[in-house]
Amino acid sequence: MSASSPTPSSVPPEKRALIEAYDQVLKAQAEKAAQEPKKPRRPIRPYLSPVLLVLSLGFAVYLAAAQPAWLISPPPPAESPATSEASLRLAMYATAQRVNIYRDRTGSLPDSLAQVPSSFDGVSYRRVDDGYQLDGTAGPLHLTYHSTEPITDLVKQSYNVVVKRKTVAR
Image 1 (cartoon, rainbow, N blue to C red):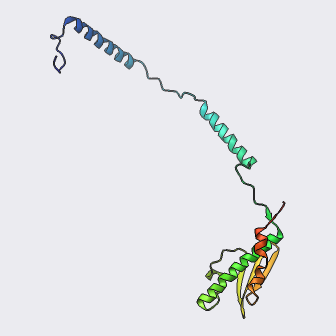
Image 2 (cartoon, rainbow, N blue to C red):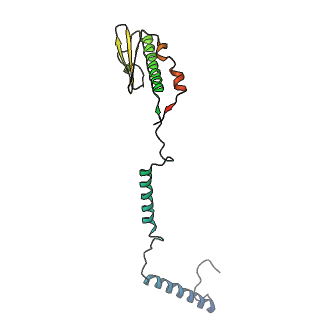
Image 3 (cartoon, one colour):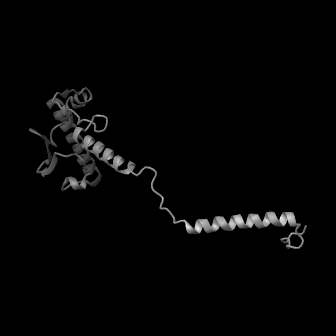
C-alpha cells in the first residue's frame, strides 16, 4: 500500500462497505452534536460559595470580638515604680554620655539633642552657664541631672534594678 489514501477502485468491496459505514457513523454523530443545544455548565456545588462566605465572615467577627490570646498577645504588664525610675535613669545616663562624647569631639556642647543621636522619650536637654542639664520624665516621676554632678550618681543601682525587674499586677 502506498502512503496516499486508497482510491475507491483499489479497495476491496468488503472493506469499502466498512469505510462507508464508518463515515456514515461519523457524519451522524456530527449532525447530532450540531442539533443539540449547548447546555451551560453549572458549578458542581453552587451552594458552596455562599456557605464559605458566611463561615469566613462569622470567623472574622469572632476574631474581632473575642481577640483570642493565640492570635493577639496580651499587653506587657506595667512596670513597677522602681523599674520605671531605673529605666529613666539609664536613659538619662546614655544621653549624658552622648552629650559628653559630642563635647569631647567638637570642643563645645550641642545646642540641642537633635545634634546628638538620642532616641529616648522623656529626656530633655538644655545648656546652662556651667555645663548642661538633663530633665527626665516618666509618668509622675521627674528627675534632673546637672553635668557638674558625678555621672555615677545618676545611675546608682539602676542597672541591677532593671535586670531584676518585677512587674506590677494590673
